[in-house]
Image 1 (tube, protein in one colour):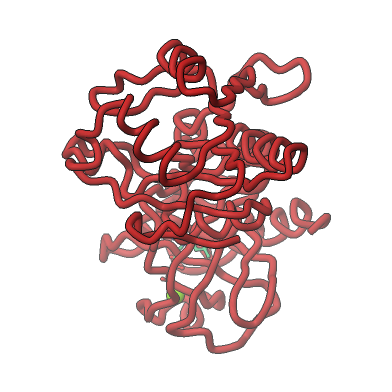
Image 2: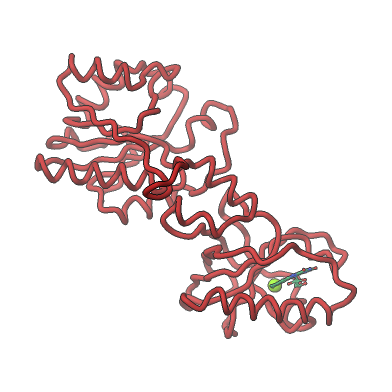
Length: 311
Ligand code: RBF
Ligand code: MG
């Protein structure tokens, strides 16, 4: 996959471009299905598969805040590139870009610059200045400008499932701690990313359970509590138990995201870490002392080992 981040250097028009456009936060199963349809159509017509996305989130660029992202740019690019798309165009979304009319966007950008032959978008897709470009508008333009428009139906969470796959729903599940429900929408476990930083150095020496403290790179953070997790770090892939919260047994009231990696003793300070959130085990509690907390963590680890057996 070629990643294109400078719209003045797109290198198009591409032969028979089959295009999809969106923010694609989360790169969830709905997005993945669109990408696969883009690849299939491109193969059928001997064309080029193209995904166009925006950074930052259009709402944020326009000053409306916007939602906490499920996937930040690096993870989004990584996930899209894994699907097997030919070109990923990541457009810096600015006020200027937002002021382009829907008709100009199609003519000057999609057709002239990209070489669009086919566009595949979901039923609720809108684009262009004030979001004037919707499916109805696209249909009319497709007839006038002679390109192909494909609007697949929504992807559901299962064959008979009723729930639409949506980034909003995934954000809610993460914030409610229901991380075990995210795979049916994401097609993978929800993952947090960050860097291992120095903590209070209390876990190993006082509790007997050293933890890697994580400086979060992500915007979205799962509900506070204790989780069974699968860790990916420089040393490999490991099972673990994570705690997100204020460690109320102690009185320093510092919010931390930390993970105790099972059967592990390497020094991973200042390296990158990825934590796949498998299942939430319980709320954080204030214990009467270190021994009580330590015993509880032992129980958490036993539970986690059972949950993580198949990993
Ligand atoms: N601290 C608490 O005050 N209450 C808890 O319920 C609690 N649960 C934890 C569960 C696990 C699996 C881990 C790794 C840590 C937990 N902690 C909890 C945080 C603990 O106090 C912290 O790791 C040490 O104080 C070192 O910073
Ligand atoms: Mg620690």
